[in-house]
Image 1 (cartoon, rainbow, N blue to C red):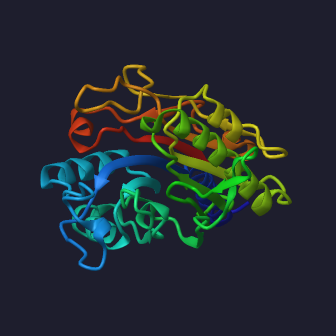
Image 2 (cartoon, rainbow, N blue to C red; image 1 turned 180 degrees about the vertical axis):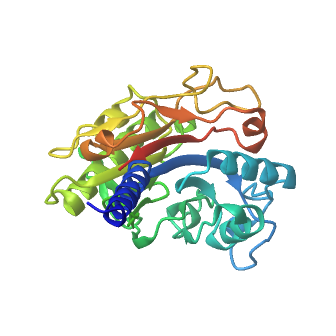
Length: 310
């Protein structure tokens, strides 16, 4: 072998090693974050539900908006599921004004049931993503049994937003974002969350039951704990087993919610559930909870995130 062939062989081997290393280092970070009343500063004259007095939709203070941006930038997720957002317009404005460095090209928000009922707070679920979005589907009109004995039905409290994403070097991701009714509703809310979970399970079976090894992620503020009946329902979908990824902050604390007023004790209400193919791609067996001081200013919830490797 002459020296030219040796040089070519060395260069080829070097390029192969670099290429392999790049492929090995591909990661994808997915988060969920309840932004706590991301209301805009506008009063819609065509909607009484937008009245700041009647619905308590006070604008998110600038101090909290800035804190939110710092937290979201620190997490630096490729895809982030959001809860308690008033509308797409304000989310787009917040994204452009505060999160420009993160390059979230895709803003997904479909006005849901909380914006259409007299008892709704006008908050929606949403997604910000650097990853290309293939489709977004609302299930706000989907009806499921609420009380089978009384033959009554209900719809999702906000929505069960279904977003398909196509990340580079990863399979297609089927992301579902939710935010069931608060526990402040007592016994009715408890059974309503269970009913919503059963309804969500049917949606997933209908949409993906025939798919082979689909990548499924359910993320959001479940308003329930890991051992609750509603969470167990999500994790026992027939033919599509999902696993809740346990989450901890840097101090090994598991809570994701803390009432700013102190009226509610810290609790674990925000979760990420994944299908088996997603679980196999996890960089760690646990999820992370962001817990710097800024998070306490930004919202009454803390973001939770997982990292995947290809």
